[in-house]
Length: 161
Image (cartoon, rainbow, N blue to C red):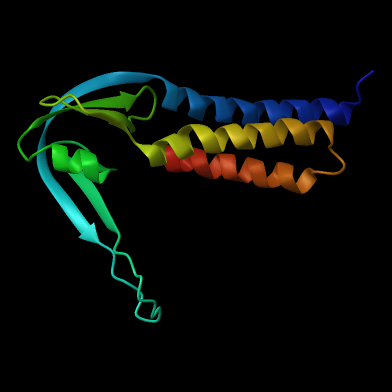
């Protein structure tokens, strides 16, 4: 017979497993395909740290594409392969409308949003595994269980807002 405390813990864990699977589902399936024009492409250079006096200092750049309704970061290869006022195809997620993939219509280069892959798939999957493992070792891994559940809630709030 399963104790009453263990049943409550199982129901509590199922709620967080549902949140994790909801985030993974949102990343895995795209619902909306939009054709939009690129309005602006920005290149930002990181300012080097003046306290770091190394001579092999490398410059870091970030590339952001603005469309009529969305803006997202992309790689340098994709940013140089498209121009302003060109059409782009954007694949948005099913539930929360996040940009998962984007494709240039002129040359057909496709790229996925790597940060979106991290917080939409890899991170929730690791947190789900931590919750399942800590359920079986309840007395020893309760801190990992609590941290995983808090991170899943924060991740859900990040995806929603």
